[in-house]
Length: 93
Image: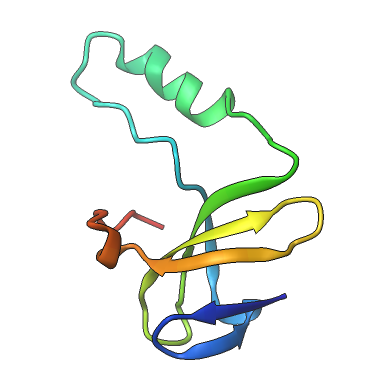
């Protein structure tokens, strides 16, 4: 699979680190229900077939976080945008 990095151009997927689904947000560890929230966050995620928005890190290139739209059945890529351009915080790998 080749990923079109907005800064570096098209690159092999081996240059990137996959973080996962771009949707879930890490729960607040100080919340009263933190243990249950973290259990759900880690273990009870959907595994959709079809189009999905993911986070990828261009580790061997510009070191940018990217939001990638990818079809999980065909690996076809749609829109690829820098997370910074979307106003997203940098996730932790």
